[in-house]
Image 1 (cartoon, rainbow, N blue to C red):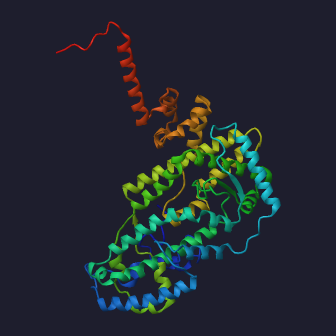
Image 2 (cartoon, one colour):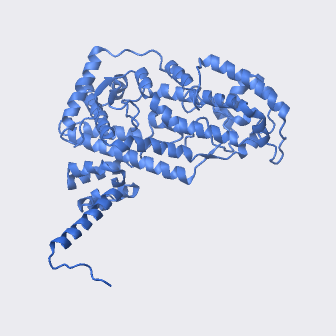
Image 3 (spheres, rainbow, N blue to C red):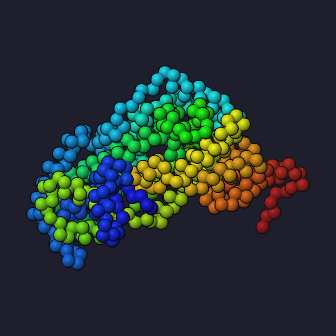
Length: 478
């Protein structure tokens, strides 16, 4: 992983590391200005070689100073009450500050978005068996996007923040944990401020660049609501050969296709979000960095706000990639590739003969994702995942071949159960998967309910044959 969640940083031996950090752009999503480092507060144990030992008196002094700093930081950020591992009041305030002033959606723009959505839905009807999934299509400003997607971001970010907060508290020396007692809540509040500040800066940047509510492949907005961001779409259109109207219809068709899939495949939204939660549960950290960072720490640093900020910018932990994380990441990447590949296939089928630039636009968006655009970078900063489906091209090819060989009904029927979907190996060798579908295995492949129904049907047929056969006597007695 090249991007780490919530202020983590790689532990490397580069002597210029501090110079790089000092020169990093303040306030950007990847700058992580409030990278939370519990070791900066002198909580390292004395068990390591050369350790200075645990000083309860020093800890009390540090906590008092830390409380003053926490109060000042919360007031400066306009924090409200915090419940949970992330302070979302801070996140929302900082995001709005970064968004700045926005141009309101005009009646003409809203009408153009609605017309593009209606046209896209009409054309999509002939390209998929899934009916329209959006009950309304809206034109959003960046502020609207922030308000409409924050609840989903909470679900994505809370598991990571909760898990990390619990881990570093558990990593403290036992004597320190016993002495902290209820004061650990204050440290947790500091973590909430830290995470909230990073989330706010990242979402503020992302809100000005996303094109739709599903631009990163995940269903971020409310169910049944399709949303387009006209200002971002206009900026995206600059430099392209296609007209603004064609691009608007194309983007509307992609949003409508995502909405159809997420609305009529009931398990899909839950599966994607739960996979992110599985990834969070797999996070592990090497706490040996605590002792090293605690050595030589000058407690007077806590009285100097500028030195505190420098301390907070120095991450002390490096998350360890675990087998569980690798498996969750592979599942997530494969599922996202299948979703995006299906959307690309359906939109190309629906618009290909009507808008000559569809192929070029699809390639532009595919490259935007493959090279790690703003959405991927933001998600990597927030959750520690490179949300980059690397096999979208292979997935789109599989769906196209499946459409050609089996038809639209069979292709869309694969979404009826998660066990019917192709896996990562099928994307590398689509022929075998297509053969299974063509051979009639799509309805029972790894589907225990369907298999049980088949067994029961065979048993009923055998009983019927026995009852209808006059020559079939009772079972022979032993």
